Length: 482
Image (cartoon, rainbow, N blue to C red; front, side, top):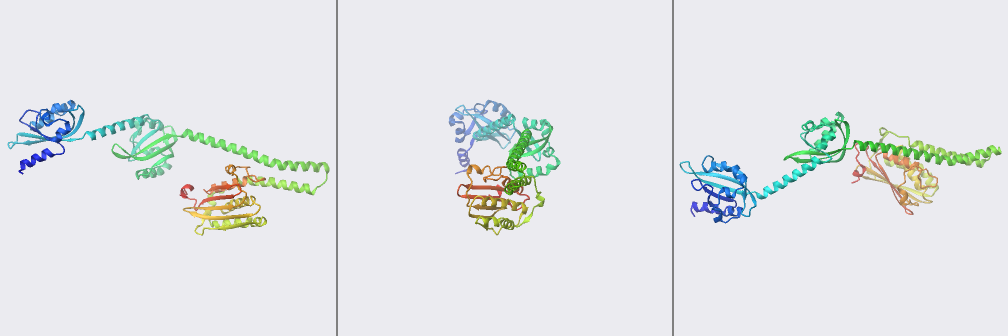
């Protein structure tokens, strides 16, 4: 096979459309075309060989490229490259990426123009869909009630109308501004940290932040994530102003606190009124009879003790120890001290009290006297729930938290009453005030821990107290248990 036949075979079997135009022949009529060219436009070879460039081209693109094509065929330029539309035999539009190269004679005069056309119809269809999708997305963002910002290199490069409204600044003022201009000096360091985390691929969802706006400081709730904007990496932030909502929540909390104070006052009044009524009655009787009665005196002293207990427990609620008084303590030693305090009571009721400790637990940062108060209160409640039986205390470590479990085989607590535990003056005991458990909840909360009750009537109760080993830099207890 000679070189001429080899070139002919390569031309005919090429996978892309190819045509050869004679620069000296009829303008726009191909001298030769391959099968891929026929397939590209849907014509037979005979049909296509009679079609001019103008007849197979989209009229708008032909007018646009006419000068380039003429310059190629007349030898003024050696090659052209462009993307253009063609008219398929079926009437539909197809896209081609055209490259034309001029072949000259020995005297440098133009001889042939060799044209290659790569079918890019599918690519153009995808680009169109992406463009329409982008335009639709941008339209949604522009009309959104939520503020949208796009940040790159610590500067705002896009903002929608809602973003302008939230900040109180115009679009011209926002675009190009440094993001740290919207934070007070004490919050810039945290903002820088969060921005670097976003660049590393982390994201933030429904986070709260205080920002500086033209209206003063506002509280926003934002979601931020890494994205691609105009073919480059950027950070997208979606935000909304929740300042008024936060004010309403604060008012609600204050209202709930006032309601709680009223409930506590009513409870204290109710709990104290009963023993005072008894004392008043016996005092009036003493005034009438002028006679001292030992039995009556004992009853009055007992009622006065009840009033004193209620007042002491109520005052305990107001006592708050700072976390600065927390020290590294041996949790097992604290539990043993609590067991010693109640040992006489358990022996009196013929109750077995045991302990099982996890020896891998290190020292725990806590206030020992406060935890002793919690443990003795829980054990005392367990004692009062049974005539005889057992109470077991155990410890267990998982990650950065420890769990103290107190299990008894007492009478148990109905499920509908479990949800009320910890409320003031709600008690499962006949003469209980509920303040002891409320104080225990408060102490565990001060230790950034959790206290949970699990119980069924007739099956006993399990109390779980979860405490962080260290108070500083502790995250959510639930996360530590995973």
